[in-house]
Amino acid sequence: MEASVFPRMHVSLYVSDLAATVSFYDTFFGQPATKIRLGYAKYVLDRPSLIISFVENAGRVASNFGHLGFQVETVAELDERLTAARAAGLVQREEIGTSCCYAKQDKFWVNDPDGVEWEVYYFHEDAEFNDPRYQDEYSQASSQCCIAPATSQEASATAEVMAFPLATVAAAAPEPTAGCGCGTPTTLTLAPACC
Image 1 (cartoon, rainbow, N blue to C red):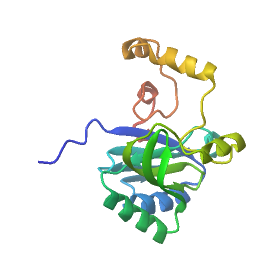
Image 2: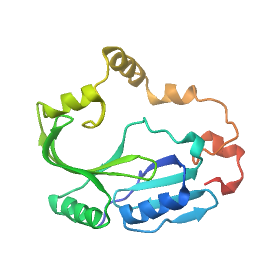
Image 3: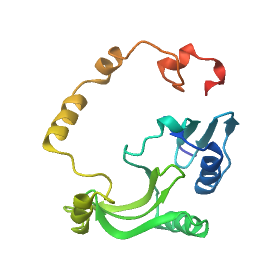
């Protein structure tokens, strides 16, 4: 019996060119978009269990949020995905046997048309260190292992935010406003065509 895909994660990204984005993600995900409308595309994936949508709005594209990614179940699955991504010319870099984010991993990276980085990785085991080469990359800020290390002030702020229970965070949510939220309170004020 196959496991349920729920709960399924949903992500929505702003993009500058929807046609280029759909072309990239059709190739990267290995399936066509589930829905395409004017300025909007959505993919519903089973592996990984994810709903991801793209809203064309070049002015809101952000390049500094980090990266997205997914972990595969086996080395064979990573090899299959890497082979397909190589054949399509999508691979930006490969890291085999790296210790990144305090874990030994095999991975590869691709960038979508707006520069959003995707990491596809196989987790071998936890590690007590990161590869030393990442320190130079952090210092130069040109590339990095997962994310740059947080300052002590940032780490403290994150810990404080995470200490609140979800119910407290939900109670402080802002009132709905016009705009596309695709599943958020803002959706309530929109025409059904939003998502």
